[in-house]
Length: 554
Image 1 (tube, rainbow, N blue to C red):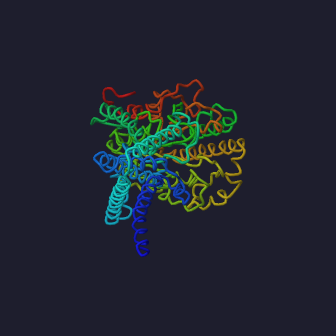
Image 2: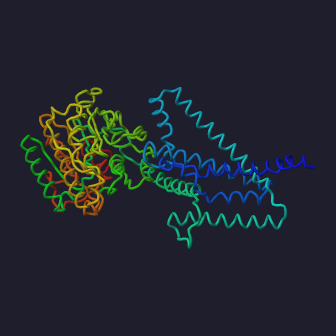
Image 3: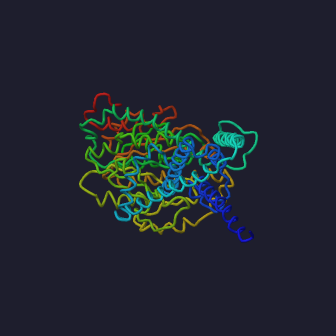
């Protein structure tokens, strides 16, 4: 009899070990991070509130027909959410935002093409195959794990009922934690863990529904877009066009004494200088869809002619098939380009925005030091645009360029100074400036110092764009210069969404822009009308097209 004890022990341990391993599989899937910052050993200590609800539910239902249905639903849901969390991880890594299950589907093909261009077709196919194999392995492991726990049947009906009641209570705790975290209600106590995976599923479901609603509206707008029809567009423009978004340049630069004394003086001096060089100017105000950040919402609003005030609408616009200003400029015979010095990661969205050429930070040739979060001074960005586009000329078409400046982006520390254009070189002339002054973690302890740095940074941004216009006064491009948004409220001291817009160029083109509610010069009157930014696509098209289509905004 003594010799039989080890055999009996092994017999009892094997089912227990299977249960432990199966629970571990479910645990790892439930705590899978969806953000690079969460990929730490500490994540292993997270207790998933969904785990007891799943295990108890499987035990209560057992291996019958109901158990089979429950297992299928669980495996499908967990596999989908695991895939969504993986997509989140990739999107946060590349684009600093989460994955939208509706709008970002349109980017998968673009992302694969971008990856193919970066690492080659063979490695791209290998990577995609590995991802599919990994997903299949997760599904197989989940099916095995749920089967193990469904087989751990409670021996008596009363015990099974008790387990089922415990599963319901555990599920209620999951629902309560999700609602508490999402601000729907407040729990009387803090649960001993988090329902992270279930919350990701709920959030993506809600995001998908909201995106579908916006997508339907945007698709309707795209379908009735008069500019989508064939016909002349922008045929009254006889030169390059540069749309410049000046980062964090808001109406506060004109109306708030702390900033206006310096910024208005710079604009007044610039106006006199440019007028003396034979250029015309007109200015006004636009209402931006965003404040304090998310510049891409302003860029997309102007380009699409749609009010895009959040990430859901941004994704819907990308997926809608709407023809942007840059698509239409392409069709009108322009070579379109985006000059984006603050883009430091892959940007697959650009493939559906209508740009022939995209110049991100790494493409601009800057070899100097970064200015903290700012990759390079604006003056270098303008010079790089000239060198790579306006002088090199990708083809014989005129250029239609979007340029987004960076120097006036937070943290505004340090602020460069203008140098002689011929001395820019590869940007290392700025190294001493990049190392000057206190770092952001010191400056940002004092809000007055933050505002002082913001004041200087925006002024530099204005100096740079005015100097660029002056440099090309003999053969000027048409420049449409606008702010993307106001700075954060505690910095700007102005909660309005208004941003300035300036049109600079030859008189015959600037005159056509006066119908946008603009006034002559670089400083609009305080009572100037404020035009919503989503009207600008159609206003630009109508003003510079000899025969606008019926129904076009003008």
